[in-house]
Image (cartoon, helix red, strand yellow):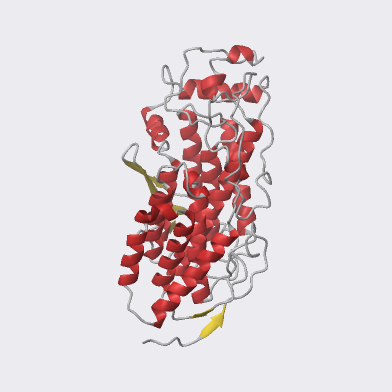
Length: 444
């Protein structure tokens, strides 16, 4: 049997259950950057081109995890089985993976609580990844083992028997238990009264809107869901509201729109359900030639920040409960604004999600993701591609800003949002990412 060359105790992490370890670090290996902390974005940066080289344990378990999470919600079982939340649950999986690899390599600080265990530097990293991911999935989704147990058995069968494998499994299991303990009773089981749609001008009119429990989920890094609550939307009788109203009316309608065929393709591209679109496309960033620990670190950053951006965004949504263009435009005769004209036949060109309009969730998430990537790679000039199962097309982006700009346009061209909602959502996403990255993922 292989014997470990050395062992080190994992450091105690004396932090609150809803906070990360203080500090942040740079990437390392492949497309990432090493260093004690994130350096400022370069003034004249060299572009970073994301080149997918193939799957690895981190990307493979991301796929297994999202297939597990995206099963239909159950009427019984664990809180996660009854109310799965893709980014929140993926963040738990990826933080356990990150912790396991950070412990083995000694490269980065961990997220979590005190973990009294020793781990050898030669512990199997693939075994640790598999055990950490499987452990979290089994804790959150014990009744969905058909989605992940075979993958776990195959992953371990491919690893040579010995102390390296057993140590990898051990540290992965320890980190999974730590994350599950930290995230126990995360707030998603809140009992809410039946939703009553609004009737006053400006109020959301949806019946049984989705993700009402989202604002009650405990954030990963933020101090509270309302920490970055957006300012109130423009008053209905204001000029900014009228300008946004008329832009969406002209560009986003199903009939008589001024948008181009290219703009319609962009709108449709971004209508793929987020619980599939974001995990699949962000997985590309974990499939480069970087070190496994760095792939794990970036995935933990992305999904923890996406989770908190979503929690914060829906807190603002349900705080303001503003109407969608599909209500605002036909009912414009009630808004008290002489610059808005009702069109009772107006409908958006693509379906509108059933939750309040302000701020835009796509903007919150895209900006949070873009800010994370910009900070990690130390440049806005990150070249990458995303695809959509709705259009069957692939879009190439020359920068992180290009992604945010396209998403902003898409939600207007689709008739789902007003511009101010997108701008404020972007601000929220950036705030969440900057807050998190200013305090987390520090190199040791």
